[in-house]
Length: 333
Image (spheres, rainbow, N blue to C red):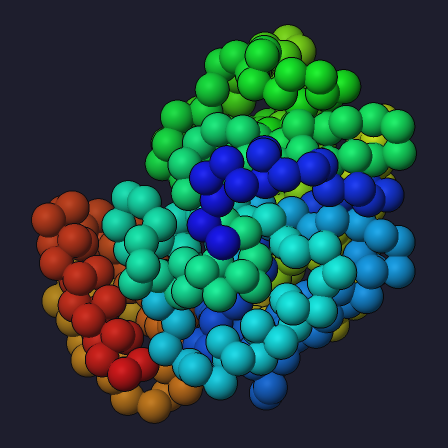
């Protein structure tokens, strides 16, 4: 269901702990430089492993957001396969809403995640606030969530009367360590002992800020080459709020490293002018690069590299990026 107060008004979910699952990014479109011949089988296999782990240990699954790579997944067969997997959980999954899950600023009926929610395959949290309660052993844990684009609360005191601890799920551009442009440092949530963030793809060490221990576990799907060293894992959250890593099965050699392990040609002929980016764009509609990258990631890499070399003005960059997106979308229909 799309949650209101249903889980809060019901009895707490009795379980042995929570299974924290980072962003899966389920998609029929093979991402980036992945070279798997059977995509999206690796993603579904990881989720099936999560089902077996959760059921074997009586864990209630919580998803940190971006269940889908695109707000509207066009492959009906894939959605049926995903539904079959998710219905295998003994405890119905609770899902925060990520930026990839929504076309607009809020979850809406046209989104694939909403379809799964109204079909009672999972419970989705559409608005920031208290979401559910879990009875883990003798401890009562209150779980809140803030979807992407909504304000993370600064104070959770009083939201879960009688709870022994409060845990909060977020899906935001938060700076763990060095961070990246546009990311903001996580802040304390008064009355919240643990906050778990999705969205940021790499795992980062926990940081304590005031009352709150923040942790970003990272994706369970390595969709881009910057995650080549990332080990996909889920985390078991116990009643004492300790987290234990459970690594998921994965193959090490899944990225096409063509052009990434040799020195770039810096000759004037190779660098060219900005108009060569348009030539690359036209080439994107052939079968060469897009056949190796269903989402156009390889051609995007080439064009972005040329932008940097040529110091292309931002308006020109924006126009070319728009054409690339249109070309990729046209190919995917």
